[in-house]
Length: 103
Image (cartoon, rainbow, N blue to C red; front, side, top):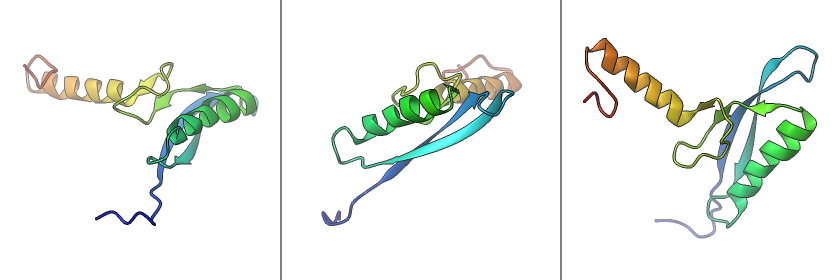
């Protein structure tokens, strides 16, 4: 049973590439949000993208933490792409066509 006095929080993390310190490197950051509060996730995503990665580091997000909704459409390594590739490799190793579910 959910206690209304307990505030639920969640954290989303991203990896990003930047040449902030000279040569291109990979960095990571995260933002905590309140899933029950309207707009909290959007504010966290906006902060990660605009304030932190783009403005401070002049970088580009390469991972997307949300497997259901693409929060960072330019992300090279979205969770859905990684899972699709992994399932495809498993299917090929078993001599099957796939996905979905190795046909």
